[in-house]
Image 1 (cartoon, helix red, strand yellow):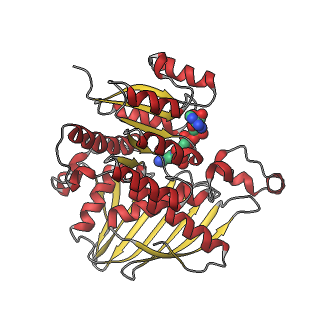
Image 2: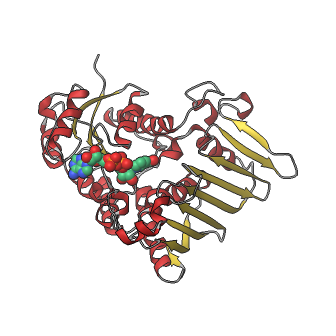
Image 3: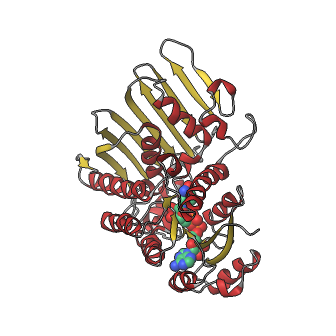
Length: 383
Ligand SMILES: NC(=O)c1ccc[n+]([C@@H]2O[C@H](COP(=O)([O-])OP(=O)(O)OC[C@H]3O[C@@H](n4cnc5c(N)ncnc54)[C@H](O)[C@@H]3O)[C@@H](O)[C@H]2O)c1
C-alpha cells in the first residue's frame, strides 16, 4: 500500500542547510512520500537534487509557480509543500500554494511584513488549509515536558522569564576590515533576502515562540537595544519584554557571542520554583521546586508520568536533538493532515505544531523589536 500523504519542497537543494533536515525529519515517521520539488533557481542544482531523490523528472519544476499549478491539477498531486527558501520568498511561495488548495509548512520567519503575515493567516483559514511554521525547538520532547510541568503548576504562577539564543558564527563581522566592506555574501546579512532583521528574525524569534509555547504568555510590548556593528542589519539585540499579565522578561540574541554555538537557553521562574532548558543538552531540564535542591530531569523517565515524556523517540540517555525536534513537528502536522483528509474533526490536541498564527506573532515581534532598537529603545506594542 502506498503512503497516504504526498509532499513537495521548495528550496533545499543538496548543499542547502535546512531542507535536508526537513526531508530526514519527515522520514522519521514514513507516512509521507516525497514526490516533487523546485529546489533551487539554479537549474543544474535543481535537477541534481531531484535525481538524488529519484523523483520523476516531470515533477522537478523550474519555478514554484509552475509547481503549484501543475501539482494542484494532478490527481496524485502533493498534499503539502515544505518551503525552505530564504525569508524574502516565503510569502509569495506560501500564497501561491495556498491559492491552489495545497497545505503548507513554511520556515520561519514567516515573511517580511505584518500585512503579508495577516494575509497568509486569512488565506489559510478561508481555504481551510493546515499551515505550520517550523519553530523547531517546540518540537523537542523536553519542550513538551516543560510545557506540561508548567501547566500542572509545578513552578506555581510565573513571575519572570529569561531567554537567550547565542551564536558566534558572524563574529568576524566585528573586524575593522569587515565593517568597511558591507559584504552580503551570506543571505542572512542582506536586507533584500533577510528582511528588516538578521539576528532577531533568525534566532530571536525562536526565543519568542518557545516562551509562548511552554508558558502560554502573550507579549504585550518590547523595548530593545540593537547592535549592527556598522552592518546593514542587527547582529546582537537585548530585549525587555512585558507580557499581557504584567509579567516581565528579558531576551538576548546574538550571532557574535564568542564560544556560543547554538545556545538557546530558556529559564522560567514561578512563585513555587523554576525550570531551565538548554538546547545543547536537549534531553534534560533543571527543575528547582522552591526550597529544594535543583533536580536534573530527563525525558523518557517514569518519574515524569505518562504524559509528554512518553513521546520520546529513544530511551532516555540516548540523545535526541534537532532532527527529532523537526520530526515531532511533522509527526503532529501529518497526523492532523491525515485526519483532515479522512474528514475527521481536529481537536486542539491534534494541532500541537507551530501555526501560521505563531508565524504572524513572530513577524509582529521582529517589527516591534527593530522599531524600538532604532528609536532609542522606546517601548513598542507587539499587538
Ligand atoms: N527552523 C530552524 O531552526 C531553521 C534553521 C535554519 C534555517 N531556517 C530557515 O530556513 C530558511 C532557509 O535557510 P537555509 O539556512 O536552509 O538557507 P540555504 O541558503 O542553505 O538554502 C536556501 C535554499 O533555497 C533555495 N532557493 C532560493 N530561492 C529559491 C527559489 N526562488 N525557488 C526555489 N529555491 C530557492 C536555494 O537554492 C537553497 O537551496 C530560512 O528562512 C531560515 O530562516 C530555519
